[in-house]
Length: 193
Length: 216
Image 1 (cartoon, each protein chain N blue to C red):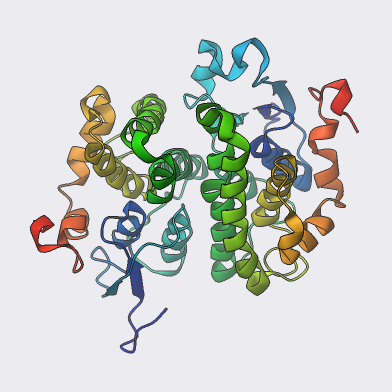
Image 2 (spheres, rainbow over the protein chains, first blue to last red):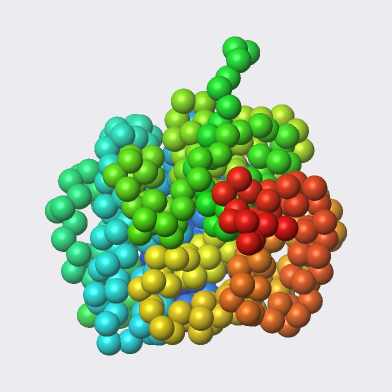
């Protein structure tokens, strides 16, 4: 919704990789110079709906494409994004881990590893400088937060050299740095960069 | 355009994700070949090294089309929509299109992955309660959204990817003994969808790999 100033208002729990994903999406954020007002609220819903927002922004705002023009490359971007947003993230989000209880670390590691084991050979085929070819896309926007989560759950990302290499490139990009969970207004002071 | 080989869908009759792709092909009038991947037999045919080369996630569906192999049903459906003529599977209007994706993602990311085979196998004895919990949670979120967006179909009055996702998820809900009557909009929409030819043709009870005792 729009705040009184007319800027898109983004609800986000500072550590949710879903909200982070939106924060680094094109038009509302650093890449496009459209300002945003960030309202920190506790996470109520989770799931992959943020991809709908990212594609909406891409389709309605000018600037660098977040999905390629070529339909096959675009399908690969969606496939990689969905693998993460449907195949990994929902299995290690807060609601599920709370239900799992004591075994949550092993559970999260299992599903992240399973997803990364699948993603690594796919990315070996599709990646250039970024996940799909040499342009940043929605796939990269999905990858970086998932690697952040993997590290939080003590998954050894070194086992996945393509994922590791891509993430190292992504975290150096200004828009990804600015949107990192440690830089958000609602980040507790002891976790700020 | 040169003659193309038919797309090949690797799927399972009862996989809701495979059913989504079958519906999309049917709505577009696209002929395709099916290769059955039995998720139960032989410990699960999706776990073979051969299938892993098609889909490293070891899940169905995987689709061979136009010289590439795609997994993730929504990526496949949107590729089909963007490259084949026929009725649109996503609306032209960007806001309506975003609503279609939001509803589709709510189902495809927020519900189905929490009740798919691999997860239920890991949950073990409590699997029915687990599946019911996450389906109910998802439908509780979906019902008010659909109340706002739905006309005759999930978003307005044109069939879309959202409807393609909804009907198979309702089928799953019924398999897990969720009372869909609690969600009147979902119920109403599903009742419309199951009467549509493309949804009927692609139904789990009518597939080449449907066991005889489950055929309609």
